[in-house]
Image 1 (cartoon, rainbow, N blue to C red):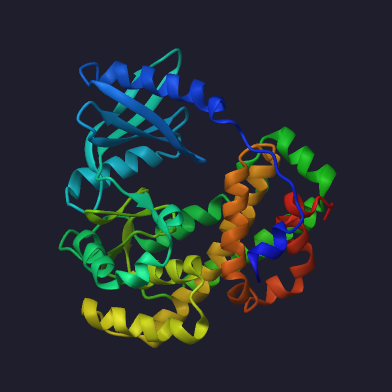
Image 2: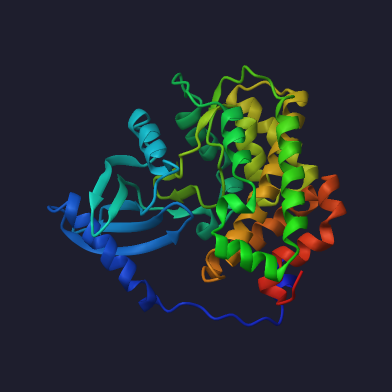
Length: 355
């Protein structure tokens, strides 16, 4: 599926940079509360995510930092990430400097870290992973293939994910009503419920004694590259699982062909000292491809019915990832059965038609 075909002859309106001034001013206020001695040179918003806003911060010496701010960390995303960073002070992850809660009119949770100058793979260019494969492999080993096993397990992450797959769990009442008015709400709920049951069933076939740490949310937005090499961010779902989880996620994000998939995979396993287990790989692949499909559908629903299609970049990223994963999604029976409905649903902001 070619992403360019989705956007052909379509017009879009984009936010002016001035629209971000309020967010930048708020971030500066938060920063001044817990880091009053920092001599701030500039601050920019890097992204708005479901659980937090992400800012880049530069001091007078041009040292770069990241600041994550959450107005509602009930899911403890920043807390979990801070816990990981405190126990993994390595070159290839952000160096945590401060984490906590402050009052700025309302309670705000923040995570402040020192990082090297780098860009996300989405912005830098996804081909850098192929061109710097050995460097990427070493960075991954430094962070995840260590002798510090994480407490949370892969199956626990899957269980938490499945608990929140119903639209009523991640939409407001107004959002649900908006959703019902525009598309076949019941059909979408049935599709997500069946997808959840398949994930739960397939996960029981995965070994219980997985003993490698993994990122578990690896994407073009969580891998960064710059002059000092690769580093990994968005580490709140890191768990005790297997590198297969991350490898499968990234080949889907990169759009690696099915013909090249296993060849590259076996090469990486060999260089990481990980034995190739066809059964385990197949089991995890079936889980992760369904999880990726669910993530994209849920993210789309959030963007349209919770955020009112305001975050145009996120919608574009969803469509981009969807296009790279499309052939693999076609291996899922329930996707093939509901493909026409899903295509209309996920492409609605592009085509402007009701599903």
